[in-house]
Image (cartoon, rainbow, N blue to C red; front, side, top):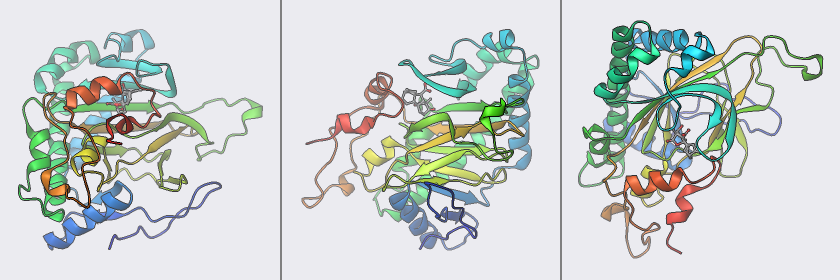
Length: 331
Ligand code: GA4
């Protein structure tokens, strides 16, 4: 049983749904692993409370992000173009997708962070520390969740998922998204002061990696898609994290856990939205074939074997909203 959050929200064309909430301080580990697996099967999405990431670590990262986005455009461009890593504004990926946001994409290994920090911050050492401490803490959280997934699925090697992102060669990334507030809406726009006014900030997609750990400030905008295509608004919660199953975890579990389609609406009038998103990924040469335990005569393998590098390369030729795993399906 997944614990629903207390007050589901209902808006037009969206559905009232309790976002599954997982309390990591629950001492009953087998219950916890069951709850996580259930949330990952049903939604590919849940909120995690009592996550163990120190508030101070989150706040330092948030302050560094806010400092960066407050800089003049010319200075932000010094961080380099976002393909593959750096600063991006409105353009998403390489195939013409656009969003109402600016962002910073960073590799998470400490060497790459330190190489880039001079171009990003006037206080590179502080920036370095903030990014390294934050990624280390959310990586630990991701690994703990993935170990619980291993336990809940009864796979023989419980660390099989977390090992991918603990690997020194892991291709994990950190993304800071900044959705500016609309300061002076034109009279025609009639924007709702706190709402998100149904303009797309970041279009619908599923994340290609294994597991995503998202934290945002207290401005709403995130929505997840249910299997019936209805969009569910996720009330913002700066004190907790949201966890999303990525395509690679769907493939490794032979479709038992599902990657969640999600999007972000744009343009709150009052406040900008900032999200900090960690994407836990395997090394480029790691195989993402369904685990033997997930395959049986009744449930034959759904996907052709592929390495993370192959999947990533293919992903970059797609549009944001494409269903990327379909290209690797066995017919
Ligand atoms: C979605 C998840 C991450 O934000 C991301 C995105 C990447 C990008 O912004 O460059 C992609 C998108 C994401 C999937 C398909 C391709 C690549 C934009 C795009 C159109 C950084 C990632 O790894 O994949």
